[in-house]
Length: 107
Image 1 (cartoon, rainbow, N blue to C red):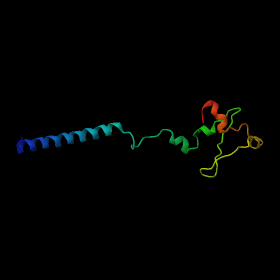
Image 2 (image 1 turned 90 degrees about the horizontal axis):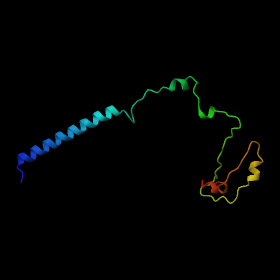
Image 3 (image 1 turned 90 degrees about the vertical axis):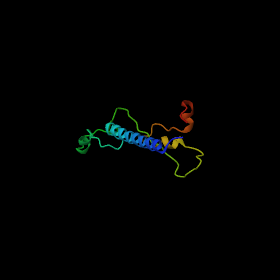
Image 4 (image 1 turned 45 degrees about the horizontal axis):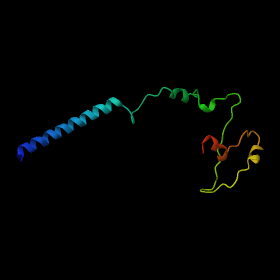
């Protein structure tokens, strides 16, 4: 059985080891400068001056845009979709439904 002096000595050493671990963690965190640290951003001045480029600014010949139409009713069952009606609208090039996506395994 350990004497009181031995137990106290072990506890003091363990406390010292914990302080070292804490100090090592702090040093490592300071070197990492990851999440939560301020970073100098290079692109900000472009966007503030209105000179930034966004993906939405890209216009290519023949480029189309997509839209997803969802039911306005939560948990509603869609019984049918009239693709002919949708295709009749000006500018509509295609209407895709879940049935169209089954062969390519996207549904």
